[in-house]
Every structure is written in C-alpha cells, then in structure tokens.
Length: 261
Image 1 (cartoon, helix red, strand yellow):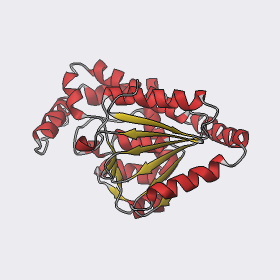
Image 2 (image 1 turned 120 degrees about the vertical axis):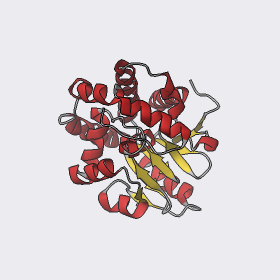
Image 3 (image 1 turned 180 degrees about the horizontal axis):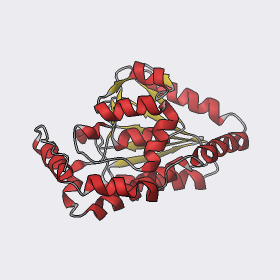
Image 4 (image 1 turned 30 degrees about the horizontal axis):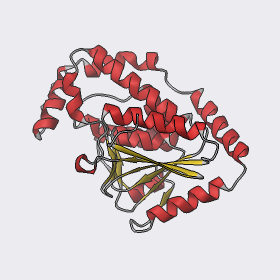
C-alpha cells in the first residue's frame, strides 16, 4: 500500500514514486518496499503510463538502504534468508515492470538503495551523488544472488568486487565511467533532465520498447544466480556473530569489531 513514507503521482505518460523519509535519508521500511511493488503494479495496469520514475525526497538521498533498526528483530539465519528473499522478490517485480523505469538519483544511493537503482532500466544522477553497498564495513551481511548478478552485469566483476570488498562509496563521475550511471545532470536541472529523457522514451513505439526491455531481461536472467544457489552464503552471514555486532555497532554509531565468526 502507498503510505506517507512514499508519494505516488500519476502524470501521464509518467508515473512517479517518491521515497519520502528525507529525515532518515529515505531509508527503506517494510511498508516502503510494499509501496514500491504497488507502484509497479499500478504502472503496469495503467495504459496511460509509458515510464515509471523513482526518486527520493529532500535532495540528499535516493535511498540509504534498508532501515537498519528493523534488523534488530532478526533472531535466526532464516530471518536473514527471508529478508533477502523478500528483497529479491521486490527487485524482481521492479525489473519486470513492462514500462521503462528511470532512477532519479540525488545524493546517496547505498545498500538496498543502490540495488533498487541498479534494478531500474536507466539511472540519472547529480554530480554530488554517491553509490555503494558498504556492508563489508558496516553490517557484515550479504546481498542476494540476483542483486549481485545485476551489479556484475552492469559494471563487471572487477568493479563489483572492488566496490564490495572495500565498502567504499563511488562518486558520480566514477559511477558514470564504470557504467553504473547512464547520465549526469546538475542538481538544479535533474528533474527536467529526467522528464526530458522520459518524454523522449514515451514518444517512441511502446511495443518496441517493451520487447527491447524484456529481451534484455531474459538474456541476463539466463546467467543469474538463483536464491537457492546463494542461500548458504546468506545464512552464513546473517547467522554470524559479526552480523549481530554490525547491527549493534551501526545503531550505536561506533566502528564494528569483526571476528570472522
């Protein structure tokens, strides 16, 4: 369901979903993930929609990952498996939207926020934007097989391992150079730039665009890790003492003390 944490706007030929927790850098709650799925469903049901745009409120963040406080509820490795499976299903739904999807990125797109952006068809960012999945230095968990596969498909295995091994954030220029970002626009012009791109796409033959998008998805899906193929790695990370330490350290705003256990 759409909540106050998200805003859905219908402006044919566009549909726009805004992540609306600027005070928390638009960190994703469970309800926001549900709202993302609902926005995908609404875009697909409405023939007047030709392009779906995702963006974050406040100008400082697209989405700063999942709200970490929710991880305090996790008790067993299965909780981690269930969470990653749910995220995999949400991102799969986003990837399967029949209409083109554009991520309008202002500020940080990290963790699950980066994964959401990667699952979109195209990404337009401001020069100040930063990207990354810094879990190696924050939480000690891991991403789903599908999310990892998308990242490797987009930027290649070397760049993907660099980003994930170091946990560093990548600036917009580097992100553009490695293929993580498609276009860069000034902060005061990004809204207009995204709308111009969306209008150009929307003016073209919708069935050609749909076929292009779906053929690309099917091609990439043939070499994607399934949830079952990555389950042992997800259980290893989420069932570890390091993950509990990572969550506790993140919420306490202190450096984690890793043990490899």
